[in-house]
Image 1 (tube, rainbow, N blue to C red):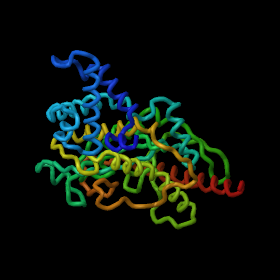
Image 2: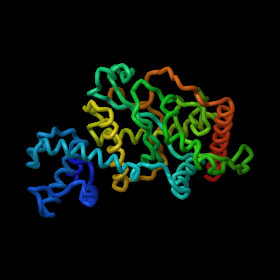
Image 3: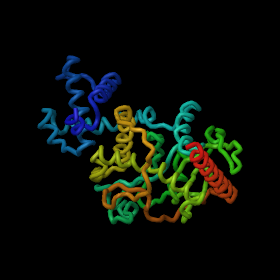
Image 4: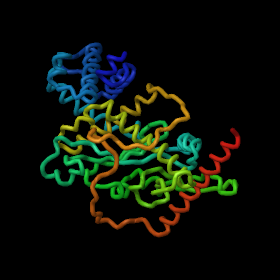
Length: 363
């Protein structure tokens, strides 16, 4: 079992699920040489396993030929077919909650850690683009000195990926990407902005607020849907305790990036495709397979959350910290939005303080 996972990064039942989908949809079909269903299924299994091995370990196609007796060119052609077909059904695996019941399930997880109204964590991940064309080099080269591409991801408390932005050049910062992310625009303007949730004020009185928000770091715009920690908050103060709690919970999105990196070596080692569209498909397919595997992951409930920390230097995948970019578009955040953002953060800090005090009294 462990050896199979190390080669293909997913479990055998998930491989069977992928093979069945490709056969049912006709994405792998009979040829002049393969006319019976049994031979077709064996070939389909080998091709799918080869694609997974390429994503998980970066195995050369010629080596796949030696292991499967299927030519390297057939493996290469199918790998791109695999990316195309999986990318076409990405909305089945990566989506923000579509119903109030689905959203309530996610919000409930955050409410238990004193963040009522939160609908996920958001951050930007940068991936090394080893085959970046010379024409895009300056637009992709960030602080590390080599070209990268960026994706903004929204994740849930249980490490499911709920949304991925379109691919961006590595020099674009969080403030720029968040303004052109369709997922964030949907949360700001769709029915999510009318969802009501409750919190407790300074006096212990339950109040009602409207609109789902996401938790983030300090590199984002001051929008009411983007709540970040306080800067330079004093330890032990209301703001300090709130910031510690939020930063601890927000590490879930960083854990997701770490899981993706360790599971799919094609991401960690640098993506070696020149076509930026293929690079986007590679990352999206890895995210889809991550969500497929959530049911296979161990979950251990514990009172300890991941504390403050910085990503490892030089691991080819890191958070934030990308180069500043002069944004031509007008910043849509207004003074009213900044005021609403500040008010919401104060309310959440007061709620966190009251709930922590109540817990201490009970114990």
